[in-house]
Length: 257
Image 1: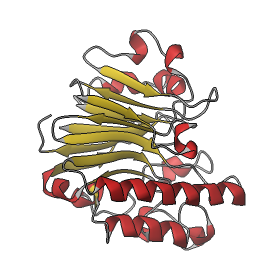
Image 2: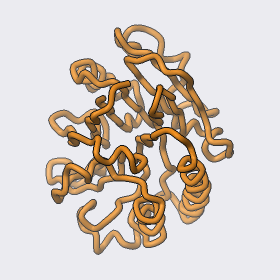
Image 3: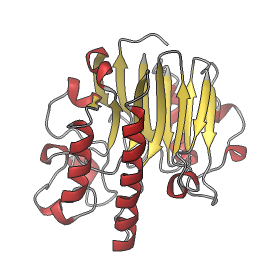
């Protein structure tokens, strides 16, 4: 099974940049998209519904904001949207497809860069999300949480890490949160199971030649339950084309849907 996750930062702009042309060549089983900035009714037509894929959307309430989607070649048993708290559901931040033995979700964590209030909201969101992740561990199936978590786990996961310790995305309390997810909670960073290299980033700010200099951060993940650790067979971040400030993260699993 191949799973791709990608933060479009506007699905229409990403499509203009060639994302869907690239996507249909990847033979992915599930594609998780975030930050669509468009509602489902605006995305009719073949451009946003490639042949061979079932498409599912969860819109934000406000126009031009957030929103997530799942594209899958395999008909899921069920689709779940939202996590039951306003910060997620009002802003269209979570959608999950349930297959026979595994569930795959497309999700985003809000950024805290805009203001101290935004950062406080992000930390509140993370605490609520942690509650969901803990409940998930009690279920008798495997899970893949794919999307933008807006946290760089360790110094190897962003450039200029020392300077960025006081910047949202690499604050101590954020790193403690994700360390708990990968530590005591037992979840797996699927990318790092296969790729231990430095300077493996999934996001680059749109200024100061950050893309060409590869000065960015790894903010996008596929986080799995522990039993999927040994099924990870390949992991890479696609950088040959630029569809948004983020890059697609591609993980191959030894799983049949």
